[in-house]
Length: 360
Image (cartoon, rainbow, N blue to C red; front, side, top):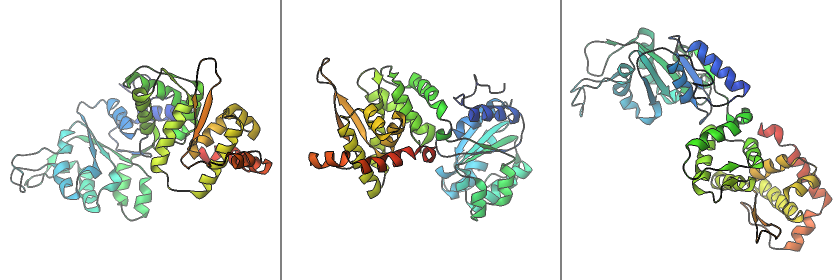
């Protein structure tokens, strides 16, 4: 059965995902090798699974991460070996291609394969025959190869680290999986999907919290989004996820991975001062800057600025603190003087207003 929007493992209704599902449905029944390209975490293995599900092949889908084993083990792992072929080979081993007989073998991270391994794999793809290590005769199996790479394979060919003939062979059909930042409309649907399988108590998502997720760049793509949803379900207090909760979690991730950047530190300091001047009301701050509130949230996420509201009582007005990766100034009078500077606000307004195209 061909994968459709209801049977496909690819979640989303954006134009790019609909087009990808349609292409999978067209090429799945063919025996043609397929190369899946996309950044880390976009869901390349899900594409491979959809290809196999729609192929009608009766064998298994056998996934294999090429960079998970040393080069010296590649031949025996993929082609198999006979007993006594080398020290420790106490029994025969079929190998991945034999396991994928009448099925599909998925070679992930194919770009990390050594040139020697590439030559051996090319022969197996061209002839359908391979020789297990230590065997005297070739073996034939009916397998389909689906490979994946986290960058365009021809870039590796140009760099001299990948054989052009193998690239042309496994690239019979090339599928490009879009990064999450190019399919932002799918994020609320993905959050809903991941929430169904996350541990912890059920959560409701505030619209502003989803806006923060949609504006984030997601360098780790769908895998990073799922990890964030899982952590919120396990660690969040309460049943409503608000924008500051998401901003705080994203800030902690960025603080662990981002290198020092003096220019961003200065901009972060200025943004914190402007938020203080607005009494930590993001709507007021955005209005004073002349930008949309979602644009302010996006820049806060990029700079690692988090507004955490604490309510002293139900009747009292919410107070707030600003948490940032840089240490905030202790001199409140200096901060307020800088925050009310027209020139400073204009610089920050220009910086924030010009980030949308970069993020997309």
